[in-house]
Amino acid sequence: MHDAPRPARPSAADLRTGLAWGLLGVTAFAVTLPATRIAVRALDPVFVGLGRAVFAAVLAAIVLALTRSPWPARALWPRLALVSLGVVVGFPLLTAWAMRYVPASHGAVFVGLLPLATAAAGAWLAHERPSRRFWACATAGSAVVVAYALWQGGGALHAADLLMLAAIAAAAVGYAEGGRLAREMGGWQVISWALVLSAPFLALPTWLAWQPPGEAPLDAWLAFAYVSAVSMFLGFFVWYRALAQGGIAAVGQIQLLQPFLTFLFSALLIGERLDVSMFVAAALVIATIAVGRRG
Image 1: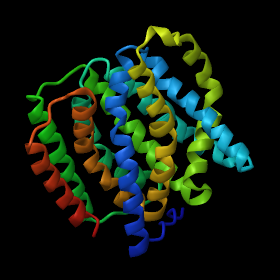
Image 2 (image 1 turned 135 degrees about the vertical axis):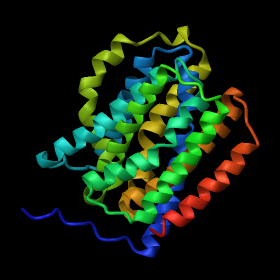
Image 3 (image 1 turned 180 degrees about the vertical axis):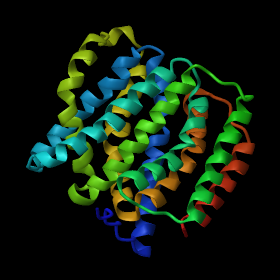
Image 4 (image 1 turned 30 degrees about the vertical axis):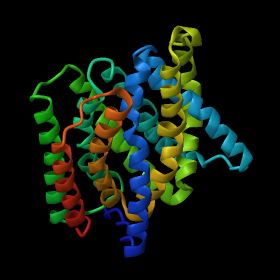
């Protein structure tokens, strides 16, 4: 039995470009939890979690039709289904439920685990083999994020923590498999087809959880529009391109900055407390990225 072929190592230029695209994608995703928190204050979590994918699927169908994109080969459908289960259904639905019970800044604790989880999923699915130094730095960076966020929360655990852990696992698998597919299809095609193929299965639960627009305030609908158009669709254009160009494990480390960006957006959008020590921890995280990327 032969080992699976290892992917080619990205060039230094590809890595730099991938990291730049990755930072843009992470910034877009950093607004997701506070926006979801705003939306679920007035809207059903099932509608927010699954409905965003249905509305994003409409946008994806329009883009695919305008570009006359051919249907993906049937051999790719199971892989697109795995992407859908991870980032179209799993992460949005689980985080929507979690945001009903905990602040967005608390949810950011678990987002700090995404880089390590994505690297592990990339090693499993894409057969990437980061060095020991990479794993050490990824673990150290994740530990800084988690320790800081738990310290901010007084070390308290919530029932929603299990939802967030499951969401992180789902996102990591969806990111890694999407990054693999993006090398073959292109990043925007991956998320577009994942949305379109999953929409028929999500339409009914979305319709059952639908609420008339007048029953929710405008800010809830604006937040829902953001997580539908940006978090669920446009953000993946740049994110999957970044993973494909720079490598899943290496670019995934940019996610170490996402909790701190989420803290910032949570303070700006919903008034959650911003602490100066956040910037100290962020500096340590950036240092681990700088060292770890060389691995």
